[in-house]
Structures are given as structure tokens and as C-alpha cells.
Image (cartoon, rainbow, N blue to C red):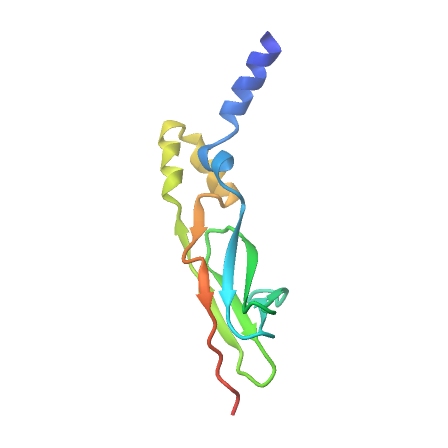
Length: 126
């Protein structure tokens, strides 16, 4: 009985609202022409490519800072997009358990990206 009570107390003390209710990654959908490749603006790692269906959903790790994604396609100018990180109002439930703010802050779950659908319009190179 003591072990169960101890585990229950640890679970309550070391978790927070957003750790339970939210994922650390968020799906962002990009729509545009086939063949557009999406790259991370900070380290130039390929995130995805728009293929048939004219859309792709990319999972991006939540952070407090905005995320820059660069769309590239041969014959077109590179198009940077800023995905804005906003405060997730669900994390206000942490008022009931104030150390939860620190946990959500450290995991990035206190934020969310909004909007979640981006339309890519690229211009041809001159």
C-alpha cells in the first residue's frame, strides 16, 4: 500500500497538465505544388517534400522560439516561412499545480504553433 501511495504521489508531483494532455511535437501541414522540398531554417535539414496530393504534414518539435522553414524547388526562388510559437492557454491549468509551469517550460509543451496550415506560393527565378 505504501508503494502504491508513493508512486501516486510521485506521479502527481513530477507531471504537469501539458505533459499529460499534449505532445512534444505538432503536425504542421504545408500545401503547394508538387516537388517543393521543406528544410529547417536553422540547420538545413530536410523536413519533408510535397508530392502527389499537393500537401504534406511535418511534425515539428514545440519550442518557445519561432521556427523558420525554407521551401525550395528547382527554378524557383527559396521561400522562407516563419511558423509562430504561441502560448498554449491549456497550460493555465498549472495554476492548480504551480511547479507544472517549470516542467511545461522545460519540455516546450507550454507553447503551440499557430496556424497549422501554410500555403506555399513560390516565385520563379529571374
